[in-house]
Image (tube, rainbow, N blue to C red):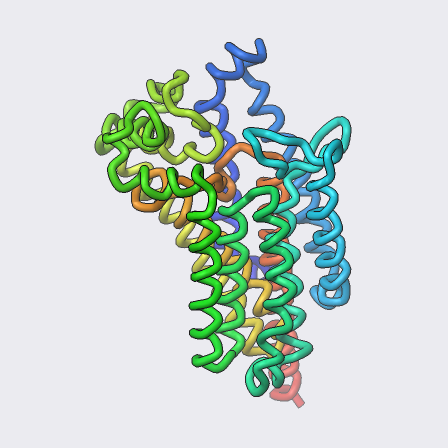
Length: 381
């Protein structure tokens, strides 16, 4: 049975989820106590999200990938419907000026998180169904991009610029791996870059964020406040950190300390060594995910391969952006750190995505085991 399990992949998933729950608890305990009267409010909600996510991961692991291939189009249509619903007043919950959450009464879901997974599944199925068109006809490249443009417009209307960047970049990377001619790819890359750039500077608050990271200390108590507090957290952490639970910046200095900026709190409490080890876990997850995709492609399962590539690219890109924002290398974006940041929708979807990776890997190993058994049978007879 051991040859049916990738212990490195599963180990990285479990380690990141466990570290995430610990850091959410540490970063939120004082804020939750002050504002909600329950120090473990966010911890409990995160644990519930993880539990639901693990149940979801188990469900996707049970069914073969061909089931998800057949359902990928329905998921994409359903996601578009939800993206429209979230823009309807009364159905969409507005938080910090953005209508990103769909109100379900007892709770709310962030539709953009589900959109990321739906886009990966849809594009993977499109690559399988239109492989020749993608490589030979420009229409084969344009058709999925028209749909993705609609997704991008709906996300910008929320507005959720960060999710738009992640989805569009992941989609472009998947299409590049599918073998789209380079001149078509570069032309569209320029168009997408120009559109995202114009959107980024079209709103004053976005332009303010884009320029604040260049010199946050010039506006330390205005647009650069969040970044300067994050940089102070990194500075206080030094090599080995101030100790788990010992962060000062999480005490009402650093906004979003347990969501978008949880990595800054981690660096303060666990130091540079802890931050590097956390990055190593992400690299391990992404590496194993890409290997899973490569093995699936070797056995001609292109859907499983591109689902694996897409999930790995999505997690890698979002991790890169989040950590880049935390360290001041990139402009501030409202993006969670996969596995680690607080957020029910985020952790639920990332667990389901991880479950799909495990399923593809299982099918790879099952096929390899069958080939080995057939080879042994032939040798005997």
